[in-house]
Length: 340
Image 1 (spheres, rainbow, N blue to C red):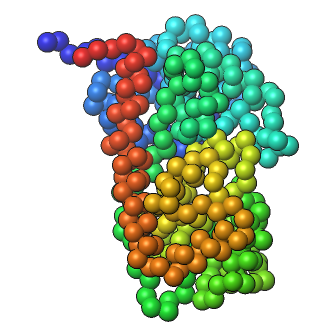
Image 2 (spheres, helix red, strand yellow; image 1 turned 135 degrees about the horizontal axis):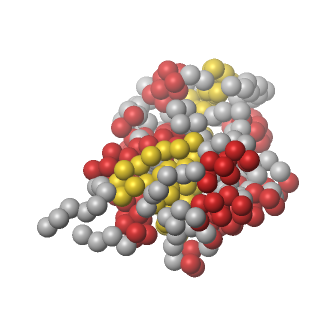
Image 3 (cartoon, rainbow, N blue to C red; image 1 turned 90 degrees about the horizontal axis):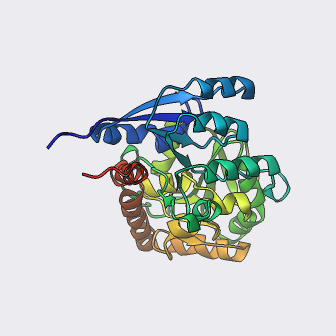
C-alpha cells in the first residue's frame, strides 16, 4: 500500500522561538511524533508590527495546514490567511481574548480578534475546560488537549518528611502571578498564627513579608526551582476567581504534582480537576479552610505521601507528551480528513 503524502504544516506564533515555555509545551514537544507520522512542520515567528505582519502573512509559503499558537488575528490578517486555502487550527492555553489585569478582565478589541480567529478556524484546541467553553464547543470543532508538563523532567517521587522537620510550604512564580500570592496574605497570616514549626518558601522575582508566618525569599533560577521541589512538602497555588483564572491552563500545579507535592488551592478553573476530589490535593476558599488543609497534611504524613504519589500518576496519565501528541495528531487528521 503506498505511503501517505507528507503534510506541510506552518506553525504561526508571536512567541520567542527559543525562550517561550508555552510554545515548547504546546508545539515543539509534539514535533517528533508528528514528524514520525508524516507531518513536516515549519515554525514561523510573526512580526510584532501589524503592518509588517500583514505583509508577512501575504508571503507565507504553501501549506496544507496552519497551526496557530495563541495569536489572535485581526480581520485584515485573516483575509491574508484565507488566500492560502489551508485548514487552520487555533491552539491556546490562556484566555487570550481577555486581559489578566483590566477591570472584569474585559478587553473588547482582544475579544473581537479572539472571536474572529476562533470562528474562522477549522478546529480549536483548548488546554482547559474553561477555554473549551469560551470557544463555543457547540460547533463540534473544539478539542480539549491539556497542557503538557514534561513529567520526566521532575523527580516523580515523594519527599518524606523527617520527624520534627519544619513543614515547608512552597510557592514558585513570576512577576505576573505574585499578585495572587499577595491576595492570599490573610490566609497565610492565619496559617502562621495557627500552626507551629512551619515556613513558606517563596521562589520568584519579588519578596513577600509576613508578620505571623516565617518566609524564606529565594531568587528564582532553574537550579533553585529544582532544589525546592525536592525539599518542600506542599505546593501552594493561590489565585483569584475571575474570567482569566477560571479559563487559564496553569503549569505550576502540574510541576508540584510531578515533584510529589500535594497542592492546596482555591476551587477555581483547572485547579478543581487537578485536586481530583482530594486525591492529589485539597481545595480551600477562606482562611479557616486553608488552615485546616495545611494542618491535615502536616499531621498526616501518610496521607501527604499518598496524595503526592497520586499526583505523580495523574500527571503521567494526563499531561505527558506520549499521551498528548497523539491527540494533536488526531485533531489534524480529522481536519484534513486523512484516513489510514
